[in-house]
Structures are given as structure tokens and as C-alpha cells.
Length: 221
Image (cartoon, rainbow, N blue to C red; front, side, top):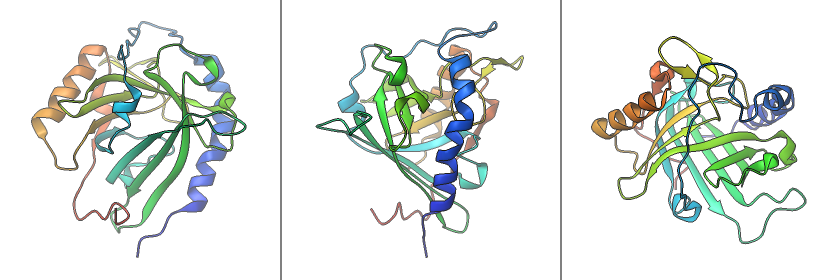
């Protein structure tokens, strides 16, 4: 029987505090030879949030271990009114399973630019809803095509040059790389095309691992 891992969720939320020092240090800056990442412009957040996204490849982070690379989905809702008191404008719901069908994830909140007040609307920031924006982490929409049904997401500016490209971190903030499709059905050609876009942008895509969408309940959606 599926059950949310509430303990893990709140543990992950608490880790945002530990990662905040890293977030302040890195911000949107680039400390080495990694190319500056350009994000989508113009960006229609309402269209982006209009339907669920299914993750088909993702990098390992502290809040997304490889053991949870099953049935991974993200849903977004643009709020009519910001939350109180932190004024988040987007509701986020993440969903994942492990090989035994146990369910992980839960609600988060997002805003455009976060505490950095970045005017680029495709540079979102995400945090647990009970935390102020000071503790949010970057969520950048690097490529997005609604008609083709794909998106490439980075957890901010990559700063680690591996020799095969650049990566973000693996902790809570300033971490992650994802390939999204609008459907859970695998389209290998489309996934490969988005991965090539990531390579062209300067990412090391060897950090990406496949997500399996098979026998998924998606919490009986």
C-alpha cells in the first residue's frame, strides 16, 4: 500500500537551512569556466503549469536519491493569491515511488526569482511553503517547448567543471538536472534531443539517470 514518507519530506525541508550558506555563496554567479546558462525567454508560466510533467531523466540530489527514480512526476498550479506570509505564487507537488511502490514527495511552494528578485520569469525558486524565500533554491527552465511537450530544468547555474561539461551540486539548493516530458510514455528520440540541448548548453549529462514509468499509480490520479 502506498504511503507518503512524511519524515523524509520534513527532513529534506530542514536540510534547506544547511544548504543556505551554499545558496548565498553561489547565487547566480559562476566561479569558473562553466558557461553562463541562458534560460527561456519569453516564458509563459501559466502554460508551463497547465498540465503535469513526467520526469524521464534526473540527476541524483539529497532530496531525490536514485532509489526514487520510479514514476516521478511534478505538478504546478499558479495561485490566484500569494501565500501568507511569504508570498509564494506557485504551488508545487512532487511525486515519486521506489521499486516497492512506496510513495515519496509532497507539497512545496515556488515564486518567480525568489528572494533574489530576479526579473527573469523562467528563473523560478522553490522551497517548503513554511520557509521564507531566503531559504529557497533555484529552479531554472533552460529549455521548454509546449507544443513538443518537453522541458530541461536545472537547479541553477552549474559551477563544477568535470571535464565533460559542468554540473550543479548534489545537496538541496543549487542542485539537480531534469528532463521533463508531458507524458509518462517514454519517447527515446525526444529524451535524446533534450539531452543534446543540455550538452550544447554546457552541462555534463553523465549525471542523468533514467526514471522508470511502469505500473505507476501516480497516487491514483
